Length: 514
Image (cartoon, rainbow, N blue to C red; front, top):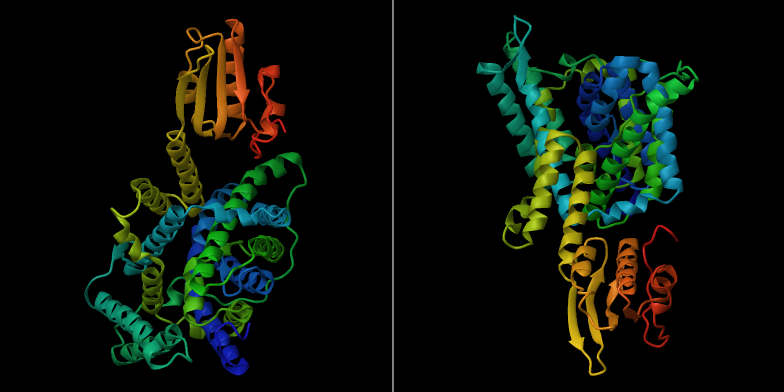
């Protein structure tokens, strides 16, 4: 841990602690906002942030990554909370955690690495847009009519000045001193400036963390959910638990991959799955609203120098201190400061280099990236990533299906040979089937697979059906250069398959009957 930044033990420890403090301050408004979205007590959001940050930092597979209450999970649980109440939510978190631990134990987390790069680009760009849009609500105030209105006049100017100042400090401070995180310096400076302005102009009010909700509270207490142990109750929470587990793991593992790229190190996806599950089970037993990895706070942590486990554990610890002892002080931090920090996160998250890819990479990759970013903005990250992977797979299948080539040659012995070139799989079987004129072909027909690979069960079925068609019209079809596995799986071809041990290829077929 102490060698990740190339620093000595004391310097690295100080950096980790200061980075954890910065992240804890940034976690407060996010946790409160997500708790309100989920229709739960704000303290449930803060408890979730504390528990998830500490547990995943201590036991997870990606040092430096920050977890907490997130919008991705909040939008899922709100329907359960509204319809069934908080106790059902806590039970759903227990089941969610079990599912996530099972995913890690079964070594399934590694499959996040099959997510195509265009999907990953769309994910980070869409996430940057989501983070940006989430900050716009802070530019609204509640009027005398009880309705929300956009800020105007002096309050808007003051907020804009604090945001710009925060962003300027975040940008220029690292050039002066890297020992203290720039975000923490920005919080201190702008908070003091806001206090001074309010002291000079008593009628001036700047929105603060306390305007969202009070963060004062006690230690989270152990509580077994008051949940009926019936089949109907279990089936009620099961769909929510499955969706929550999926959403949480997708966002967490993609965040892990993002940190891997930034730090040029490699995390442990399966271990992270288990840690996320342990964190959510703990939330279910101690009154948190659950959560997953948070890309924005993770970037703040990494950019502030927090790349070890201590930073995440410190973030959770500091957050608990805020709840217990420092609530009155933390509630005075201007929201404009935290908005400015999140705007810097947006700039750091968005892959501006992707804008230069137009015309330089295949257009289908551009379309996938734009699709994922759009779906991320209008739905959620999990749906976007799943959509992107499916579309990428379909595009891949379509492109490779076009590679199938079939050439023919008439032999002097009165035979006709079909030479198959390219992969034969579900997307190319239609083209394969249309290439044969079994009614007008001679009595002896040869299919040569020396330059082809039979990929899946659809391909095997297509070969079997073709063999049966030639058999029905009294003609003989010879199948050459098939792998041993293909030969054993072909049912209808029977003795039509010719075996040449020296020339037949070796590869495996993806087939559900195996």
